[in-house]
Length: 440
Image 1 (tube, rainbow, N blue to C red):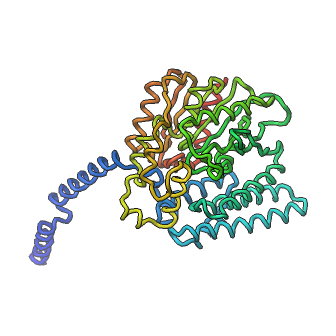
Image 2: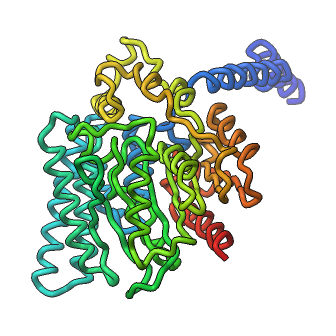
Image 3: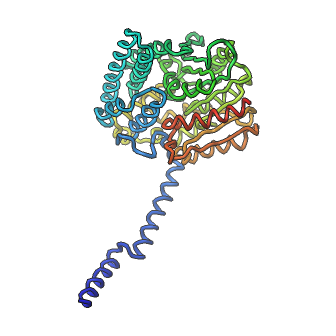
């Protein structure tokens, strides 16, 4: 029996040495291979960074669709933008990576929520109506993702989303006001909700989005947390955002000019305290907001997620800018249409995403010229980008104010992606606790 066991053990050890499984040589080989792969990935990270690549998989294999589902859609649950059961049912019906399927399923859900909201409103059930109409508004907005600008449904559904949020807004107390700020022959549409009834001046947050946002996104991003903490909430579509590109109003290097109109409007209101006016920008807004503050001393504090000191090198590292014709041809309709829509918003031909880098030259600000308190909020996953990390360091090294701060929100709290939209409670805690200290 002992000889038999010894023979089996000898055969096993021989197989380990021959195959490399489990032995010392195999361990070293595995470690060396992993280290080599990590180094290669590190080098690639310096060259390419996809802001829409998530650190976890939420539902879809298409990474762009999954990013939007996990952050824009599910992230808004806390603020009554979507209902979790409805969202996952819609997701279960969507063909992975297919733009038309995405648009149809969210449209169906929008109509269901709208019907429930109108029924509740007709019956005098104002709280139920407000809840349903809010969600219907955002489902219509979600159905716009990956929709091209020449599609007539884009304007139709965007206006429907806006009309339903306006209707829901009348059921808030204080009400959510729809506003239009005159600007260069058109208006900047948006929303304002005061912190409390009356005209007593209050702290105010101006929320600004980036390259793909509508004002409705910003309401569902942080508005409830804003007025819960005693702040007025104000947001708008700037040129490049919402439907403004349909009027020829695309993004422009001097975003401080439309931002001045927004600040003018805010300070025209008796319920806004001019000494406690802050602005927070995410994505491209992380460049628009500090640029505005550099030119406008009426802004008293700023926050960014994350800071875009210079948009050109950031866009230069994006996979869509570096993609070959072969890679572009392999994109899903969802991802391909998202890229085309971004090009449209920047005034770039939709079949030339490589032009996005050049279009972003001049979108800069100088941290040394911003003396007010400044806060940087960056998801841990986004902070892996060498260019993102470099630009945050430029800010922290050069902001003059002693009340400057950088917070990297952690992956293990589900707060890692671009704009940290998947954990809005944590973002709000970081932002408003800091602002409360600034405005003491």
